[in-house]
Amino acid sequence: MENYSVLVVSVLLFVQLFHGVTARTLNKQDGSEDWGYVEIRPKAHLFWWLYRSPYRVEDPSKPWPIVLWLQGGPGGSGVGIGNFVEIGPLDSNLKPRNSTWLLKADLLFVDNPVGTGYSFAEDTNLFVKTDEEAAADLTTLLVDLFNKDENLQKNPLYIVAESYGGKFAVTFGLSALKAIEEGRLKLKLGGVALGDSWISPEDYVFSWGPLLKDLSRLDYNGLQKSNSLAQKIRQQLLDGEFVEATDSWSALESVISSSSNNVDFYNFLSENSGGNSITSMDLGQSKVISVQRYSRYLSSLRPTPGGNGGLGSLLNGVIKKKLKIIPDNVTWGGQSQFVSKNLEGDFMKPRINEVDELLAKGVNVTVYNGQVDLICATKGTEAWVEKLKWEGLQSFLTKDRTPLYCGSDKTTQGFYKAYKNLHFYWILGAGHFVPVDQPCIALNMVGAITQSPATST
Image (cartoon, rainbow, N blue to C red; front, side, top):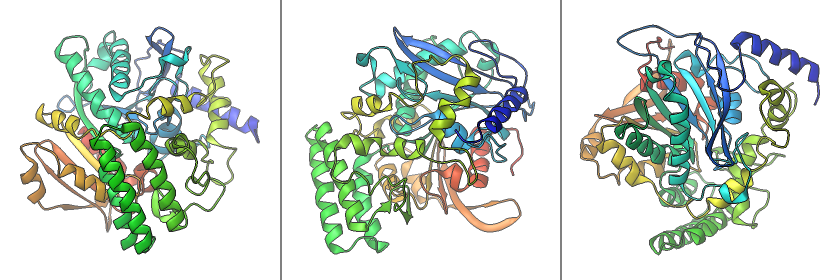
C-alpha cells in the first residue's frame, strides 16, 4: 500500500483519540470505542464496532441515542462502508469527518449478515437464506451486547438502514420488539429509519423505465423493453418464483444499462464509464454479478483524491492491524459473494407488510430518499408507501410538505412531512448514498429522527 507509514501514524492517532480496546472490554467514558465478535450460532460470527460520542449532551428529558447502521448489498459492510465512507468519525483517508453522525448519537456498526465484512462463517452451510434468519442473528447479537450493560440499556436504539439494509431493518425491528416483549432483550427501541431501501422490488423495477424515459435516458424502445421485463417480474412474484424473479431483475438491469448507455443506478444524472463501472461491466452475465454490484461498487471506492488505495486495502491493512482480533484467515469482504448468493431466493420479496406491522405497533418509522437515486428511486418508494394498510395513511398523504434548509443557507435542500409515527424525507441533490451526497441535511435529519439533545447544524 502506498504511504503505508502515513496510514499507520493516522491509525495510531485514531486509537489514542478514541481509546480503542479489544473485544468485550466496554469502556464507559464518552469518546471511547469498542469492538468484538459475537458467536450468534455455532461457528457463525458477527462483528460489531461501537463508537461512543465525544459530543454527548446530558439531558434527562432526551436520552442520548444510539444509531445502529445496517448496510445493504446484501453483503455490503457497515463497519467498512457506513463507517469510513458515510457517517463514521473518520473518512477513508483516516481524516476526521466534520459531518459524522457522532455529533448526534453513539454509532453501532454491525457487519450483517454473517459473511459480510469482518463477519464470517466456518461452514458454508451457515449463511442465512432469508431476511428473517438475518434478523434472528442480529437479535442474538443485541441480547449479548445490551443485556449485560446497563449503560447501553438506558439509551434508545434507532435502527437506520440503507438499500437492502432496509429489508433487514424491518424484519429485525419486529424480531427485536418480540424479544423485548418476551423479556429476552433489555433495550428501548426508538425507531426505524429506511434510507433508499429495497422494501418493494416490484415497485422499483416498474419505476425505472418511466423515470428514465422522462429524463431522456431511455427512448420508446428502451421503455418497452423495460416494462416488458418488469411485467414478467410481477408475474413471477405472484407465482412465488422468487429466484426466477431475481434472474429477471438481473436481465432488466442489463437492458437498462445497454439502452441508456450505462446510466448510474446510484445517481441517474451520472453514468458508469470509468474503471469502477458497475452497470457497463458484466452485462448479460449471471444474477450473482448483479446482486453483488452494490457491494462491489462500494468496496472498490477509492479514498478522496491524493488518498492511499481502495477501501478493501484500508480494511485489510491498517484497520485489521488496529483491531487485533480479526482471524488471520478472515479477509474483509472475503465471503460477501456467499451472502448474496444465499439470499437470492429472498432478494425480490417485498417487506411492505413488515413496515405496516411496525407502524401498527406504534414504532416510529422514517422513510428517506435521495432525489437522483435510480436503484431505489423516489418514484418507487412513494408507490410502496401508498400500498400501506396503516390506518393513518390517507391523513399522511393529504398533508403538505415542509421545506428543509441547512444553517443560514435558504436554498431548499429537501422536504419533510409526517403524520403520527410515519415520517418521510425527500432529500434533494442526493443519490443512493444520502449521507455522502448531502451530509448537512442528513445530519440534521438523524438529529430529528433520534430526538437528539444536540443542537441542529
